[in-house]
Length: 141
Image 1 (cartoon, one colour):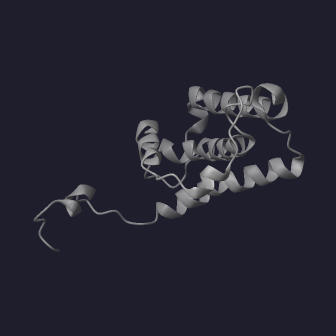
Image 2 (cartoon, rainbow, N blue to C red; image 1 turned 120 degrees about the horizontal axis):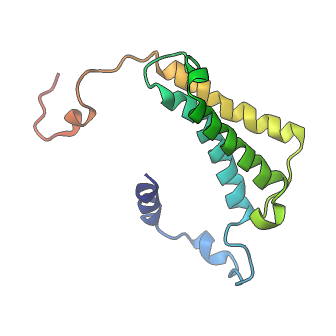
């Protein structure tokens, strides 16, 4: 999936705005603060979405969670690593520490994926293959 995402981004044409930015020196971090901000936000959102991905059809995403210790351990380790990166590895990760309000906002926004996942599961899905609709000569229904 990362490969396809990178390929999609590579098809974007350069903008004039890009040419206005000054060159970046060799000693500057490869990942900028803006990149870290976006990476952190998306990573936190993906953590919450892992619960949605456990079962694509059931509305209760927490059912049986206590039986899957490995899943809980991986999510816990991911959370711990993210907190360590943001709060304690400032030099290495070029991050800024967050206060409680900022952490709360991150968790609140990310947890919306649970609500979105629950709402989406109320939408009925056709039994036909999705790509069927894009085939040439597909009969109109």
